[in-house]
Image (cartoon, rainbow over all chains, first blue to last red; front, side, top):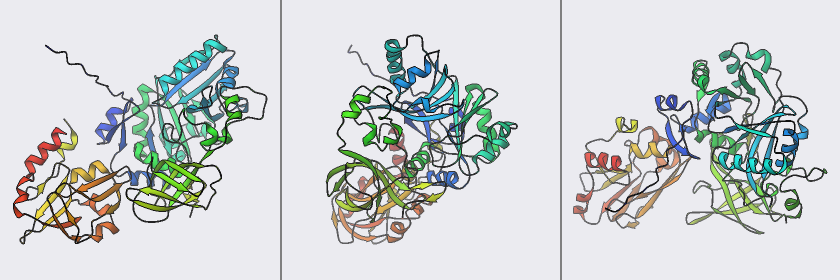
Length: 370
Length: 134
């Protein structure tokens, strides 16, 4: 008999998976995880976050604790942004992690608790690769540093103008410790970590919670009126907020300077970091810009060709902006293309005009781009 | 069990294609064509619809309209060969009405080249089976 072999990839499930199914969510494969794309209307979920409060299961992302006397020095070398900016316990920093040629391996948030204790939160699809890379780097540079993946934690992002108030309602006692938090800082509350961070362009918290208690927290938040939102709304919210999605707007084939992330890379200080010399030598040929479609005729999408006066470009992320009622995108175009330039985007058999804009498109409920 | 199958809304009086169009045959033989409830659910919130111009001749299976949701673009195919006789400008203005009631909002009307061609269309049971196999 002939052998029949096949690969069945079993999708991973977060601690909230059963709740998503019970709520009738439409599920999709996202980086190997079975995740809710929406619970009904993706556009209504989007508006809930811009106008009130919504929550996202982001437990597919991975926390990685970095321990040891050399932890901070190690991350000073491993990350493109400088962890020396983190001086106060609880402060957080957005950074790219680069390879030696300056390509983006991942983008992440690093939380500083103490010089010998920091936490990275990395993307789901890249988590295994990131961990292997960090272990290799640590073996070479700082063998005493301990890297501990935290799959025991779930993460819930509560976002929107009313998000913090709702969290305080759902978690009695949390207001006292978390009301003072500035953006990009975090505090511990019992065994939770409450961080004033997010990926939507709205105020709110991201809460790391032991997996066994995640469902109870989700239900408490739901009970005080926080609307469950899927990855579909998360994508239109982050696109409006002008935030990159790893794997779409950047990956190891591009560097942060051509990904709109020069502000996260410090090339002037004496600090050495992985990818620094390659970045310093890299030609600045391309840039990431925002586009707003000016004509009717379709929706901007990833991989559509962009024709500019200075050469060809490509859309990296495109969609319909529910807040603006127009189609918007991020696109990688030749350096020198300027804000307010008009470009042409190939949508099916048409060339449609779009205007170059500076992201973000929308922040804190306000449209920033006409 | 797939929870979407429980909810599948497939009126018995319509015909269907495996590519998720519904077809109603009017008394004069004209076909009215839309997308199924299953299709609108799969696509999610619709934000753009492009329809063929009346007078255009289409082959069976030819892509002749486009619907775009927030997530994705999808071609709409002519169920049989014929001539486009009408396009519903209301759904072009308000694509979201197709999400609300997929069978109450048609996209375009087609005069078949050969009236007998509609024999290949699926009935409700066959369409439900084709979705189950997908």
